[in-house]
Structures are given as structure tokens and as C-alpha cells.
Image 1 (cartoon, rainbow, N blue to C red):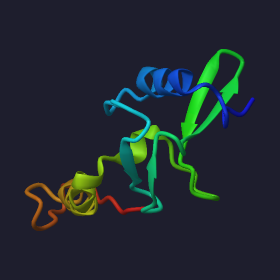
Image 2 (tube, helix red, strand yellow):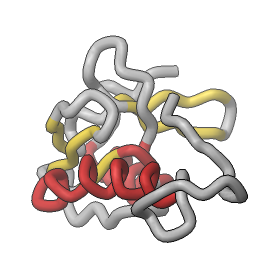
Image 3 (cartoon, helix red, strand yellow):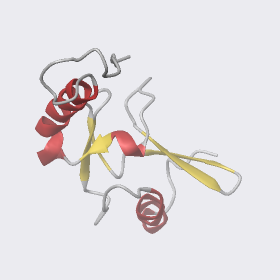
Image 4 (tube, one colour):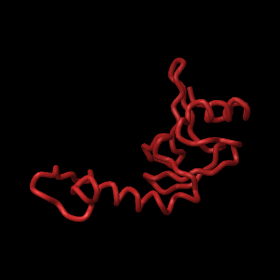
Length: 108
């Protein structure tokens, strides 16, 4: 079942109850997808239901991201940097150079 036109209170309650990463104060709150870079509001979030389970999806066509991959708009510039820094840190002991004993990670 797709929740395109459900009552606004229901939509906001679903967002609040199923986004355990960020707070939704209203449906006008904005998020930015870290996968596709698209910006959207709570009005636009794709909400689907399978049985009793709700899934929140990015509204951008063909974007596979889920709620854990969305950031607040004012933090979007930090997300790309943080991702690069995490991959750099994972590939070395101190984040600056690799050692033979450290595992080698590569971004997929």
C-alpha cells in the first residue's frame, strides 16, 4: 500500500515513529538525501506499507536510499566530508597512512 494521500497527522506520526535518526517537527521539515543529493520535505517522503510495517524512502525517482541516509539540510556539506574521512580512517591506523598490519578497505 502506498501512502501518497494519507491524512497529514498520520503522515507526520509515521515519520516521527519510523525515523529513529532525526526529529520531524512538521511535514515542512527538509531533508537531503546523502545518496542522490535531492532535497525534500516530509510531504514528499515516499511511505509504503507491507502488513504492519512502514518503509520510508527517498522521493527521488530511482533513488534506493532509506531514512538512515538522509541528513538535515544545514549538515549536508558535512556529510560528504565525513564519508571521505571515515573511509580514510578505516584504511589506516591513524587516518593518514596505511601500515601492513592494518586492514585495507575500499569504498564500494
